[in-house]
Each structure stands twice: as structure tokens, then as C-alpha cells.
Length: 133
Image (tube, rainbow, N blue to C red):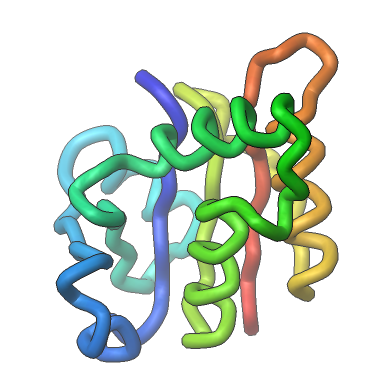
């Protein structure tokens, strides 16, 4: 398993960019995690341009290693889109979803994501929960 993303919010907020952001229904593992993170709320996952979130994190890692600033990466743009459209989201790697650090603003979320990508071990794992409520 690689990096995971769950989202919560009004899916209609992404309708105008549905050719880029595809909403996925949850089942199995992801559904169980969603129930633990957001009990009593409908959560969903997404693909961006047909790719999982892990693709964008590892792409950003390579770009940042080549000197590109985090703010110029696609993952930074994806985070901005979700936050601008009032979508809460959680990101984690593999089965390590418990006790995700909670962030309430864009600067904290992007800083945490950047740190996860730049991790000195080279793991490129992001652990965060952005909850806009």
C-alpha cells in the first residue's frame, strides 16, 4: 500500500473540475479508516488525472530534489484546490492513520506536506488531517 487520501465535504465543489478530480467510493480498508477519522460523515477518496496521490508526492520529491520549490509542485496545487473548495482531507502512508496531526490552516498543511516529502530518510510520507470545521 502507498500513500492514501480521504476527503470529506461537498463533492459538488469539485464538479467543475471533474475531468481532473475523480471521486471514488470507499470500501474495505478505506471505509473503515474513514469511519474512525470522521464518524457519521460521508467520506470519499479521489484520483487526480487518473493517478493516486502517491504519484504526486513522489513527483514532488524528485522535483524538490532538483531544486523546485514546494509551492511550484502539483501536490501544492492539489492541496490548494481542496482547501479553497472547503474540502477536509487526511493523508497517511500504508496502515499508519491513527493519531494524525490535525491542522486548521493552509500554511500548516503545506508546511507539513513539504516536510513529509523532504524527510531526511527519503521516505516521502505525509501524515496530516486538515479539518476545516
